[in-house]
Length: 209
Image 1 (cartoon, rainbow, N blue to C red):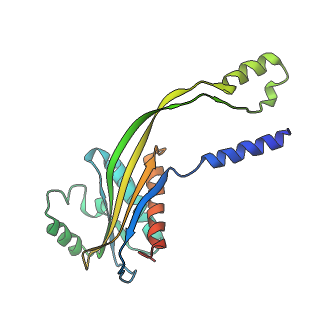
Image 2: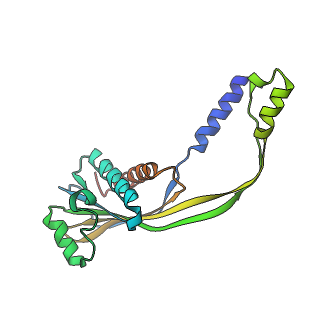
Image 3: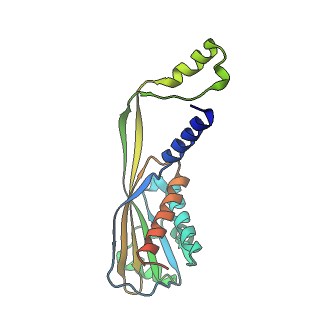
């Protein structure tokens, strides 16, 4: 087999491995949708206090993706502060949001976070290492550990999310979506992928323009 062919196969496998770590598990939309123009949309993250950094990242990325589509979107952390909606009755929260000029709200709720331990079985792989092939000793010592990879245990983190989109004039739920994310590389990559996925799905479903 030619080296060029081998490298092409390796590259294709790498791209196949870079698949999305997030998927939509369920979505719903109202049968009666108002016009898709909103003056001001608030993004509200509802996460545990110890996930403050993740909440900020999730809100900011969803805000950014809405702004790219021309909407005036604002993070609740930036607009109201981290604890402004705590210990308030539902009507008080609605009144405060409307008093600040928002006519739509989208929530980001962390429903659950799980860590699971699983076994990755042993694998036999092949990679070309031309520079080491001239002498058996160098070839053997370099390649052996890369060909015979023993199995091992690892941990995976799953996040379960829900987002709801409300029209503040009618106080009605227009859209709801649940997602699963699998062991994201970082809070930034998780937030970026989530914002893009939710906004794209809302546009596809006709919730926003």
